[in-house]
Length: 167
Image (cartoon, rainbow, N blue to C red; front, side, top):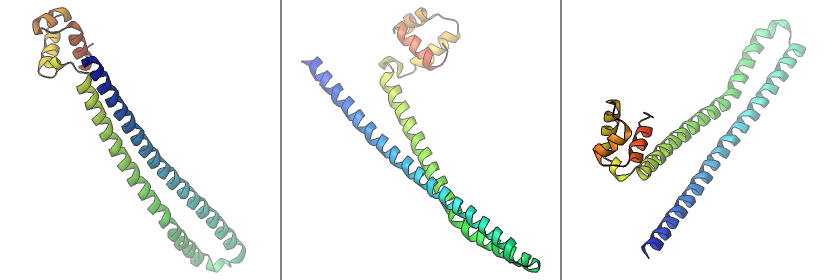
């Protein structure tokens, strides 16, 4: 009876984790699509700006007398500046969205790592045992002697050494 109850509870937890993962994945996909659309709009604006610049340069070369070139260059610069503002705004939006996305992902990764670490560590490893194991290992004791000394299994000693990157 207890085994069945444990299996049902484990299955329920697994189901909840899968639903949570699916929801997070769909949120991440939505954010990625937003970033992709923003980049597409940015590229379209940039392309349009390049085309207008080329047309202005061609019309300047064809229709302006040489004496008004300085005035026309200033006009072109003003036009380019006014066209570049939306692009700069789009870049700022993209940077902030990427920074926000990065912070969210780092936070989620830390949360998941903490959860996995707390779920996968044996109960006896939660206290000072991990530090004791590393200390005894550095002193030259072998894994079996450490396990006997701390009254834990050899696999727990190996696990602690792997976490501490000593093995």
